[in-house]
Amino acid sequence: MAAVPKEVTKKKLTTFLAELLKIGCVKGFKHFAMHLRGREELICSIVNKPSVPILLSASNSPGVSMNRNTLQMLLPRDGAPRTLNQKLQRRLSGYGFINVGLPPASPSDEEVDHDENTTMFLIAGYSKYSCPYVWVRSNHERIILCDPKMAPEKDFPLNLITTSEWREKDIKVWDVIAELVNICADPCPANPFEVDFDYFEALPLVEKYLASGAMVNILRKIISTGPHGYDKRILKNLQTISSLHFHSLGELSEEGRLPLFQESLSTTK
Image (tube, rainbow, N blue to C red):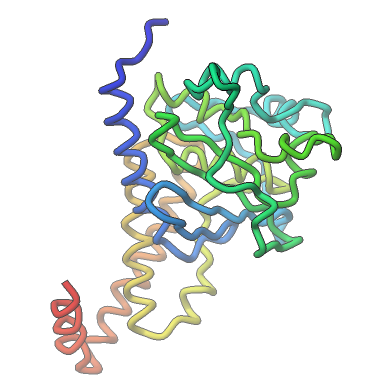
């Protein structure tokens, strides 16, 4: 396969980082939570064991095809390492001549916000690597086979289907997140982007309106870049969250707060 021109890769990475910013600002997913860490990094914490039994589903994104057997092969309990080996890292990084692989900007040992019920991942699109990668940041033993005597292995990037095919195929940030949910959550959710409606119902009115609008926007975006095996489930959630969004808008209007709200938005632009 011919090498992808650097100009094309650079443009793809710019688009990826824009998607990273778009989805990283969205709150209210049931199976994971996110926060941005600068322009190139997204921390994604995935719930290890969903509270309600759910079905295993394939992530049928463009360029991503995972069935039950594939997912079982990838899990550490089946004996398969899930990180890129050092030789491959040195080749991909472009810094092999000085024996440098693909380390993250900071080692995982520096993470202080650990939660036993979730596994934290770092999704990053560093310009120096010209390709997005994912690193495990907590509960490594759930995802990778790691020798306690080999601490550097904890900071090796994961060998994911989405990131390995990113240069040649149209892989989106949400495709990467869907794969992470599928390999981390046990049991795997039928819809990795299931909405947590209890979260939205608990928000103050203005925050509910803004947060639901952001969720509507990203769910539409995910569906538009399909097909995915979970599109019908996303669409069902999209209909419900859209209804909640417009209901919040109606409440703001009825309370006479809409003009003040619009004025406050205009002053922040």
